[in-house]
View 1 (cartoon, one colour):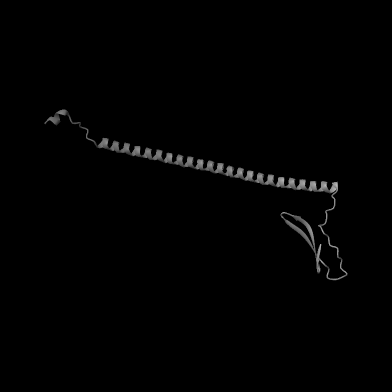
View 2 (view 1 turned 180 degrees about the vertical axis):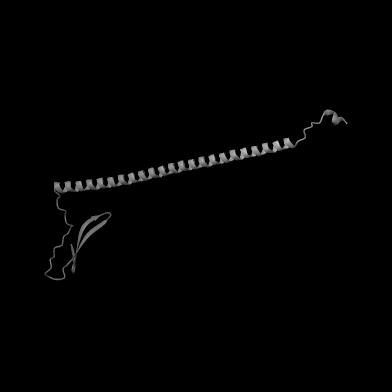
Length: 143
């Protein structure tokens, strides 16, 4: 231990990787205590009850975290189910709308077809009624 005025240096450890020192400053007043702890305060011995309490607290934290994770996963699963349900409903609604529109188009097509056929039949009836009743014979073409 070296003394340099108000500073005391004590070598604690010396090894290949380096050295450890403890530097102690002398008190500024003569009444002050000179003793300084040379090492960190030691932890008090823990009793079995303290250890059990800490283990129980750790178990509670673990259970709480596990419950939180499970809750989060359940929420995600529920959200996924809702999304799938909405997609299925949307698909069903779209299919119904497409079917209805297709049926309307088919009905319109049928009505238009019937109207055209009726118009054509009417036209042919008019032509038949206006046509000459005399049918040309073969001899009239020979002249």
